[in-house]
Image (tube, rainbow, N blue to C red):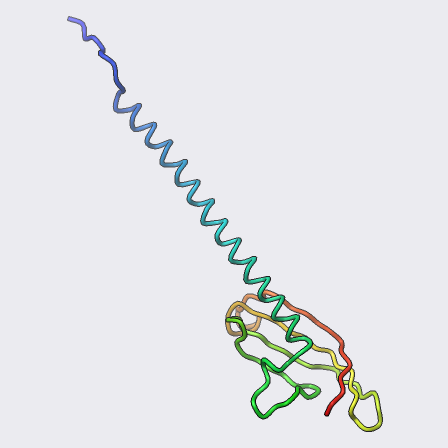
Length: 136
């Protein structure tokens, strides 16, 4: 007696095709998640660079209520745009005899979470600018 095959697929063929299909879908999901993470990092870096550039020229978003302008050698820290920002004014040079004109180096570092690089925060953007300022 011979067994006639009447058509259809064997269990091994079905399991192989399911395995191939599921590994392809898993790879597609991993690529989508990777793309989302890259897009979020790029967005955070763009916001960080815009925040750093704006704080390099104007410290008012970080100044306290009683502080009208940053003084030479001043430091400001805090959250802006959901990011931890550290702004330092360094190396002040007095340009006139009255003490009203100063050349100051401003460094702004923007981190993804609170803390500097020494405490494990991921630096998203940094900028260093030399500005000339007239003190009131």
